Each structure stands twice: as structure tokens, then as C-alpha cells.
View: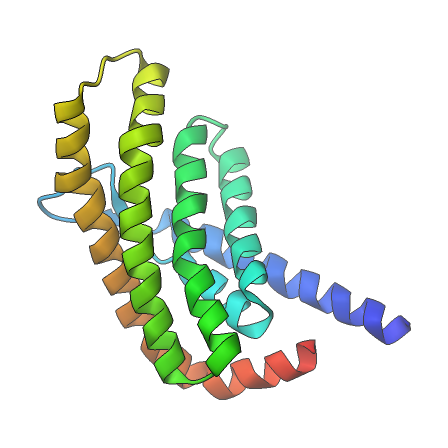
Amino acid sequence: MQTKRSSKLVKLVVLSLLAALSLVLFFISFPLPLLPPYLKVDFSDIPALLAGLIFSPLAGVLVVLMKNLLYFVASGASDPIGVAANFIAGSLFIFPVAYLYHRYRGVKSIVSGLVIGTVVMAIVMSLLNYFIILPAYSLLIGMEMNETIKWISVVGGVLPFNFIKGIIVSMLFVPVFIKLSEWINQKRMEAL
């Protein structure tokens, strides 16, 4: 009983540390040339990916949630729509990677998950932006947004941004995974 409680405490501490690291990485961001400057690439999904690989896909999503809640509080709750969109995008990206890794193990499953996560994130975020997120922003700022503006924003901004962000984070994560794979497997076994 004591060991199980201790294991849960260790898991909570590790997830909290990964969420804090994710928050720090969230503040280190940069816009992409030729895309709207409010769309910024950051590397905050990497700690969440590690949590998803060590523990479970839901643990990875939990790190994304904790990062966004911490950011929401730290930023003074100024942009709830952006925080919610970031949570959804991160979850869509991380879940397939962690799920495939737990199902099949190895670098191939990581690469497949990163490809699937990137495609799913780009497509679903485009649809959500068109139908929900952009209309919510237009209500928030009190500006009328017609179908043409939404279409241009999604096709010329959101869709390519999410593809490029997924590719950049994936290209950075694969070597990190290869370097840390033994450690990840060791932590996975300790977590079981």
C-alpha cells in the first residue's frame, strides 16, 4: 500500500515538473516568416511527449492541460480562447505519439505517431478555427469576420502553421527520443 502511494506521488511530482518545464518552453517562442505573427512555434510539447511516453497518452495530455492552466493564471487570464486552442492542439499532437508508442514501442512508432499527430493537429485545428475559434475571437474583440477572412486565415495561416510546427517539433523530438530512449524505458518500468 505504501509503495503504491509512493509511486503515485513520484508520478505526480514528475508530471508537475514536466508541466513546469513545458510552461518555461512555452514562453520561448518565435513566429514563422510569411505567416501571421500571432502564430508562434514553441517547444512546450516536448515535455508532454516525454510524459506520454513514460506514463500514458493521458499523462501527456495532462501535462498539456497543466501547462495551459499555469499559463492562464500567469498571463492574467487575458486570452482564454488561445489557451483552450493551445490545449486542443497539443493534445491532438501528443496523444497519437504516446498511444502508438505504448502499443508498438520503438522509433518507428514514434515517427508514425509524430506524422499522424501533425496531420491530425493541422486538419482538426483548421476546422476548429474556421467554425469555432475565429468566430469566438471575433465576438471577443467585437469585430465582424466574414467567410472570406476566415477562409484566408485558415488556409493561409492556421493550416500551414500547424503543419510546420508539427514538423519542427518532430524533427527536434526524434533525436531527443533516441538519446533518451533507454532512460524513458527505465522510467516506464519504474512507473508500472
